[in-house]
Length: 186
Ligand SMILES: Cc1cc2nc3c(=O)[nH]c(=O)nc-3n(C[C@H](O)[C@H](O)[C@H](O)COP(=O)(O)O)c2cc1C
Image 1 (tube, rainbow, N blue to C red):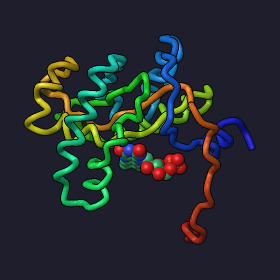
Image 2 (image 1 turned 180 degrees about the horizontal axis):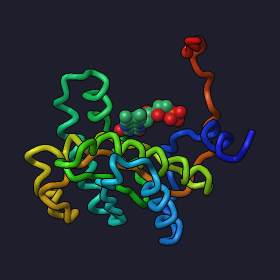
Image 3 (image 1 turned 90 degrees about the horizontal axis):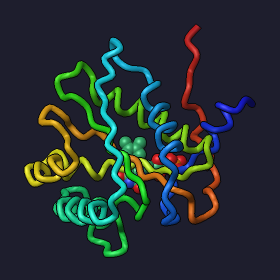
Image 4 (image 1 turned 90 degrees about the vertical axis):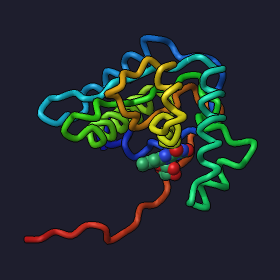
C-alpha cells in the first residue's frame, strides 16, 4: 500500500491533546493541504480562522454547550450536559473553516478541505478531531458576537472546525468497515 492509502486507513480522531502548541509552519502546511482540496469552479470559497487563545476556546466551548443542551437530539443533549466535555477537547489549536454563504457549494468545499486537513495532520503525526458542534453557536443569533471576535465577515458561514495538537494518548486503531457496501454495475 502507498503512503496516501496508509494515511487514509490509519487516520482516527484524537480527543486528548498535549498542551504544547504546534509550530506555525506545521499549521500553515496543514492549511495549505486544506486549500488544495477540490473546489467548485475554482471558487475557493473557504476561509480558515486559526484560534490559539485558550480563554476564547473555553468560552466558545461553554457557549456552544449551552445551545447543545437544548438540542432535540438526545445524544447531543446528553453530551453537552456533561461537565467533563470540552467542545474542542482542550486542543491548543482550533481551525474554524467558514465559507462565503453566497458561493455555489460552500458546505461541500469545506468538507473536502476538512478531510484534507485531517489527512495532512495524520501524515505529520499530529492529532486532529472534526468538530461540528461549533456551528450550533457561530451560526446562531447568540453567535454573532463570536463571529465578530473571530473577525468573520457577515457573508461567512461557519461550516466545520478541527481541533489540532500533539496526541496525549496513543492513536486509536482503525476499526473494521462494513462489508457489502459497493457494487459494480457492468
Ligand atoms: C460530519 C461530521 C461531524 C463530526 N462532528 C464531530 C464533533 O462535533 N465532535 C467529535 O468529537 N467528533 C465529530 N466527528 C467525528 C466522528 O465522531 C468520528 O469520525 C467517528 O467517531 C469515527 O471515528 P474515526 O474518525 O476516528 O474513525 C464528526 C464527523 C463527521 C463526519
